[in-house]
Each structure stands twice: as C-alpha cells, then as structure tokens.
Length: 445
Image (cartoon, rainbow, N blue to C red):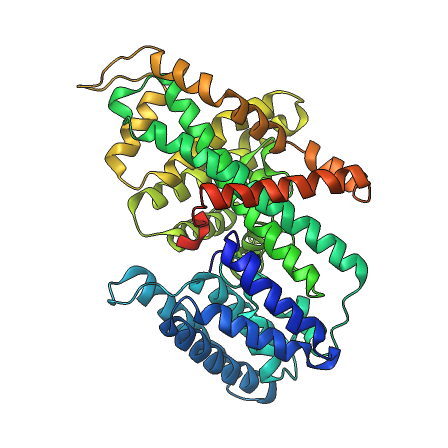
C-alpha cells in the first residue's frame, strides 16, 4: 500500500489509529503488530508468508545465538546465508514470483539483528517484539533502516504517546506528503517529458535540465517517504532514525553519502566496512574496503550494468576526494558546491538509465558530444521546457537547500507555519484526487 494514497490516508490509517489509541498501553504493540500484518497482507498473501517465514527463521537463529555458548558462529552464518540467499533468489533470479515488497529493507533489519545479537548487543528478545519490529508498517517497505537496538526497548514496555509526539508526527507526515505529491511527482513529469525525446534529439541544456529534474525528483520522493514514515512512527510513540540531512548542500560526494539515506550508509559502515578493517589496516586495504562497500551498494540496488557503473563512479570519486582533493573542496566556500552541482546530476543519471547504450548517449549529450545520427535541435526544446517548469525548478532548488529545515526547526510551534503546512496537506489531497500519485521510487529496491 502506498503511504501517499487516499486509501491509506483516509481508510487504513484512521481505522488503525483509532484501534491503536483505544488499546490499553500495555497491549498497543499487539495492535501495531496486527495492523502491520494487515497492511502488508494487502500487498499480497505470498508477501506476508515470506515475511513471517523469514522472521521466524531469523528469530530462531537470534534466540540460539543469545542462549548458546557453542555454535553461535554457525547459527550466525546460517541466518546470514538464508537472508542473503533469499534476497538474491527473488531479486536476481526469475522465480515467477514478484519481489516481495520491502524485501531488501526488512532483510537489512534481520541481518543487523543477527549480527548485533552475536556481538552481545541484543539479549532476551521476545518473539512478539521481534516480529513487531520487523513488520512495523511505516518503515517496512522503504525504510528508514531502523535497528532493533534503537526501538526494541520501547516495544518491551507499555507504549505511551505524548502530545508532543502527535504534533511532531502529524507535521512530518504532512510535509512528507507534500514533498512527494507536490514536488516529486511534478519533477517526474518533467523528467518523462525530457526522456521521451531521447538523447538523439536533445541539446546540452535540455540534457542537464533532465538530470537536474531527476535529481530533485528522487530527493523529494525518498525524503518525502522517510518523513512520512518517521512522522507515523512519532504518532505511534517511536523515534525512527533520520534518513536525510540536507545532502544537496554538501561539498563532496563523501559528504553527500554521509547525509543521503543515512541509515543505509551506517548499515554498510557498521556491518561491512568496519568488519573488513575500515581504515585501520593501511591505505591499500582501505581502498579495497571502500571498493567492496560501493560494489555491494550497487548490487543491492540492481543487477543491470548501469548500477555497477554507478557504484564504480562513486568509488572512484570518493577515493579521489579522500586522497587527492577532498580537503581542498571542503575548505573552499564555492568550489565544492560547483563541483557537486556537476557530480550529483551525473551520478543520478547513471543510476536512473538502465539501458547502457542510452546512458552513454545521454551523458555524451550532457557534455556536448555529438555521436553519429544525433540531431542538433538548438535550444528550442529547452526554452519550451524552462518556460513551463521554471517555477518548479526554482521551488525545488529552494526546498533542497538547508533553508526549509532551518525554518521548520526555528518556527516549529508558530501558528502561521502550522497553517501553511495544513494548506499544503489539503492541496496534496486535492492533487491526489484530481491527478493521483505515482509509487515511491525506492519501492523498486
């Protein structure tokens, strides 16, 4: 089910919240569990069978790891192999069954729990708590990737929701919905308008406008979902992890990936990069560890060649920043931002276009390289598009800056801000009624 849908906002969520708040505080986790299972079952029964089945297997491994003095390593290996094999089976092989919704994200949740249990960070977990944690519907499908160590303690106690949690949660949900419906979906229309032309028929300016448009689309789409998920979490009395911290204001790709999808970055840092040795075993080993992390990140996103190119692209430039020019960019007040204005759109175009030939042609057009058969249309298409979408690009650039988050924190309790957010919420609902909404981009991963 799409969080940015009328069915979720006006049917599922109100009914669930009424049941949740009417439940005695000590039974709320059971209401949350039941509601989450219903939410997920609505995407198909095969999905919930796989989800619950994997949760049972992981819990048995986790329980054994926490209780046994011998064979803990074998249980950890068994759980990891089952989780990774399931992910590979459904994501990279044609099983005849659609990829279970949210598989990649709850797979990460299970893997982190197994490893944390082996490290002694998780002990005495009840099955109902673990099942509730894995299936918690706000973060089940696209994150944030929340660890059991972050919310497990909350599940083991009566869940009391304070009034300020409600205020925070409703505000974040409404803003996230606005980002998705009023910005991301509009930028999707801009990207589709440009991409339909094809790289053979576009000029340099149009190619860059498309790249910038998709960069803003994926930001507002994923940031919007994260805000909605975190907002619902607050309404339920939980603090889910932040996932974005103004990534488009950074000066390097290294800084960007510390602030974009932060829960995924921390996951790879804590469960891949550091266990491999991090930066503690010399320069050559550090470079290998960075390469391994980015290749795994690329493979996790998809199997088409463009994702491998994307991972290699990020690895090369993060390597160069680390050992050649990163400190220079960080010290400069201007050059780092100019650098990122070029790097971000290029990286997202590599991420977006799965056809490697079209990707090559599109990037050639971005740099004015004319391949055989390419038309030169001048600026006619660009002028037409910028005339239609200039206001959207301007608003997108403003809202991708640190300014909105600064104003939100500074004036959070201001009645004028609350009224503005209320207007944005109902404007989003109007758009959903008249135009509809597209699925969140990260549902595909």
